[in-house]
Length: 264
Image 1 (cartoon, one colour):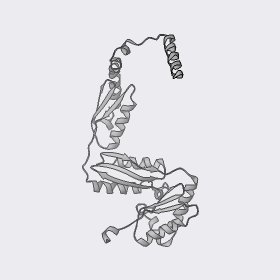
Image 2 (tube, rainbow, N blue to C red):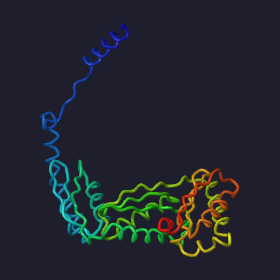
Image 3 (spheres, one colour):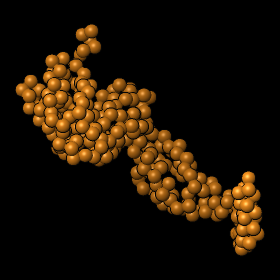
Image 4 (tube, rainbow, N blue to C red):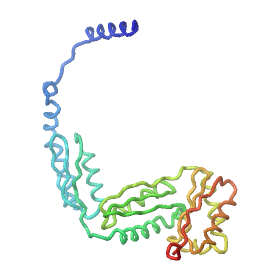
C-alpha cells in the first residue's frame, strides 16, 4: 500500500509538471477524426479511379466515405477480386476496405470443379523437381475452394493458390496449405525415400504420370505418404521401402487404394 501511495503522488506531480501542447482544432472536436478523413476522401477517390481504370478492373466500382473504401461490381475470377482488394488497401490514407465485389463466370458443380482443380494442381510445378513432394488437397463447397495438405515450399503453395484463384467458377479460396519445414536433412530424406520407392520394380509405374505419383511429405524426419495406388500390395510395399530409409524417424501411410470403397 505504501508503494502504491508513493506511485500515485509521483504520477500526480509528473502530470502537473508536464509541458502544455496544442491540439489541431479538427482533432479537438468530438468528430475531429471524421473531419480529417472526410478531407482525404476526394484524394483517395481520385487515386482509386485512376487505379481501377485498367481493363482488368473494368467491372469494379469504388466509393469512399470517411476514409473507408467500398468495392462493388463484378470480376471474371477470384484472382481479380483479390487484386482489386489489394489495390484499395495500398491507396494512401485509406482506413479500411469493404470488399463487396462479386465473382462472375460460369456456375460449375462442386464435384466437377474439384476434379478440374485437382488435375491442374497435380500437374502444376512439373519440371521443377518438387512434384512428388507436394501433397495438396482440394475441397469445394458452393464454389468456395479450400486448399489443404502439404507443400514442399512457399513457391509451390503460392502456385497452387494462384491456380485455384484464376480458375473460372471459383468464388473464394481458403488457403490451409502447410509448408514443410526448410531442412537439409529432410531434403536428403526426400531424395532417399523417392529413390527407395520409385526405384522398386513394382512401384516404377508411379513415377511416370505426375498425377499418379506417390506423394512424399517430410517434416523433421517424419515421412507421410499420400496419393493413390492400384493395390493394397503397392501400398504396403511403399510403406516398407520408405520405412527402411536411413534417417527416417517414422512413416505414416496415407496412401489410398483405387476403387477400394467400391469393392467394399
